[in-house]
Image 1 (cartoon, rainbow, N blue to C red):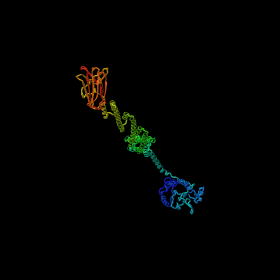
Image 2 (tube, rainbow, N blue to C red):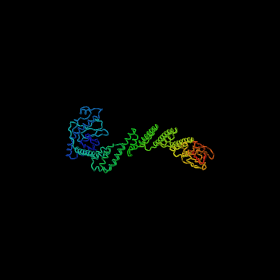
Image 3 (spheres, one colour):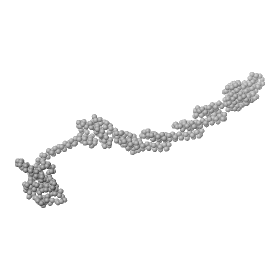
Image 4 (cartoon, rainbow, N blue to C red):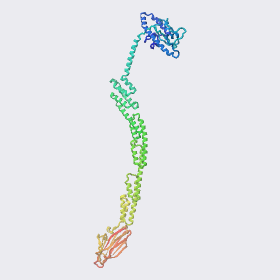
Length: 603
């Protein structure tokens, strides 16, 4: 049940509202119980009842009038759309079949007025004797909402409302206000605000509230700060808060809780901030086409960073793109024969790609291509020298090469062989013409390029053996040694040297012979026969030359006045050559001196 005047909920069996003091109208069953209770109440002392009734009369009347006005105001909207009540309260009531206020006896209003209660079925309620608000018999119920309403006469004096409810409501209101104020104070306390800020992850608010806590409150939270600091770091790592706010909070916590070891959290968030800066910069560099810088910065992202896996993935992607770019650029330079530039591009990429096998293979390929190009160019130039017969120039060019290659070594050996053959052929040409000195000179000139070549040395020895040799430089193999070492002069005063002197005397030494062993190395024996000017005028001489025992040369009647006689005898590789001079005297006092000037074995 509820009070129709103030809306308060009423307990079962209530006859009066405890808040506003208004009487309650009860249903039939409840009314019967109320009547029985009234009968019991009338048996109580009379001195107390009138005072209570009197005290409540004025207030009850006033409450009844206000309630009626309120009911009419509420009933009007509900009946909207069916029929609006006619103006003029009494006339309208009379037309509706309700009794006028004047027809109702004054004592028909009971001391206790009741509110309506919805009934299961609309039935005529039973009222106390002499009081009825129901319509006349066979008239319809004035309202179709199954409620019973009280009607009041506005001209009837109103009873004063009791103030008893005020004494009940005031303490309640004070308690409510105190509670609300207490809750508000508690709600706005720094500790509660801090708790809410922590729950809401409002780091800016936490930073502002922390200094407002007492030392006791701070000590109470010290154990939780390590965990909370890690939460702050994780939220920053996950992008749920910004670095400045999180760092300021951790820095404040570190200073407020020095014993909580929060330096680790501060160091960690600083490292994460640097890592995230590196990741962002790497993305910018990658978009700008600076692959090397991007890979370098991606590599600075730490494992603790939520961007770590993304950074590693981007490193592989950028590395692959960068490697492809490097390989294409290097190949382009190599195609234009700029091998050094291509190698530089590949070598510089190692700062980013490290020891990449593809880069290493490409570098090896380009180095081989560069060497091929270098060797081919050098061989082509050297061949030009060789074609002109300048083997020395070709060999020297290859030996001065700055790069080593087997092809260069092999070509040098080829040129050496070709050069040696050319030298040997040239020396042989000189030798064929008997110019062994030129032949030897040619061969000796090859030493500078060929070194101590065995074939060249043997040919030099061979040609040196074929050099013209003065008989004065040889030792005779038999007969008399005619090497006097002097210089002869004929009767005309001409001087001759490098010869053999044959001194002849009558009776004592009328002939002189000497023998040499050329060993088959020479083809010619040459010289000039002269009778010296101090020989006797009656002296004459005969000269004979035996080659391998056979007389091959003879000249007679050589005298002081006959002049010089040249000799050129072919000995064709003779093993022995014997020279014999025999004198003829016109008197025993005559002497003669025969001289073989420039006596030489030659080819």
